[in-house]
Amino acid sequence: NYTRYQQKLFRLIKFMKEVRGIGYKRISHIMTERGYRSVRTKSILKPNFIFSIYQKGKLREDRLKRKCKSIIEDILCLVYDL
Image 1 (cartoon, one colour):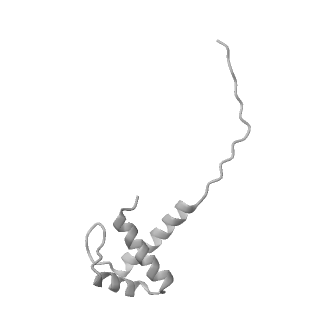
Image 2 (cartoon, rainbow, N blue to C red):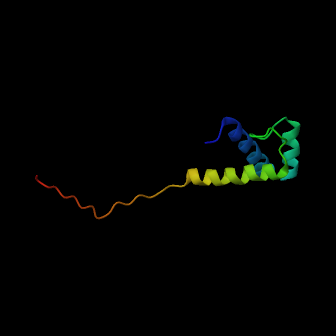
């Protein structure tokens, strides 16, 4: 599960990338100016971190939105009298 901070980072990066059309390097610069840091090491968010957060967040979104179709067929029920 994502923490609230991870969700916030992903939402901001997704907005800047998809709506504003900003590149990873520029997003990295903006996030650093605003004081955002990486989740584990608290280091600055480099462009490769931004790409990773965006890519993994999109995969996670797709996985959570995916609908699974359940089909139950040919059920055999046996009742034994002991």
